[in-house]
Image (cartoon, rainbow, N blue to C red):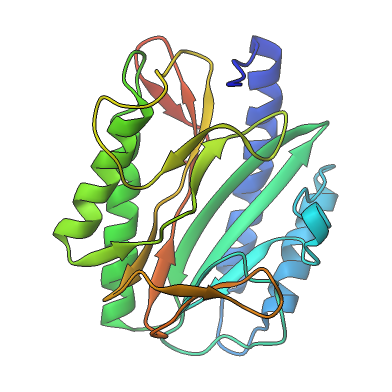
Length: 246
């Protein structure tokens, strides 16, 4: 069931999103060579708590980190560990914030130092995200978002991670509808004002083959090549949409 949010609920979600932006700034500032993923996760958590919020990913279905921090060939859901960032790494921060029972879920990627290939896939992933968001308005359908993302990704020679996608969010971390990053225009649920959606392309290099790590969470490209993930939280408005995590 797709949950349409009330005015009060939207304001609560927006407050969570404001804290998400604060955490994002701290992570960007601390994304330097030799900083470990555990250190970065701790920084994000401490910033979250300092702003009177909770980390909703922690212990979600047994997840042991506060946030997901994935590097290079690990595309999503990596549990932060002792890996230290290196020059040229492509790192994705998937950060959850809970404010008084309402959730913000969004992700961003950045390149540590210089790496042309990483910069390119990062740019294409972000472009596909924004192309999907451009389709969000009342009476369009979920398939319009999916097809727009797929077009950008595949026209640039990259591959889409299958079986994972975006979703509704707000009262709960994962709500209907499921929003795959591939599909046909004019199909799927109709978009309506006051839906809150997480749009999140996840793209891969040369193949869409992946496996789940022995930790049962990290999704990893089988060919060990670069991957990328971006995610914005978006409110459907009466005449279009508002990106809550811009």
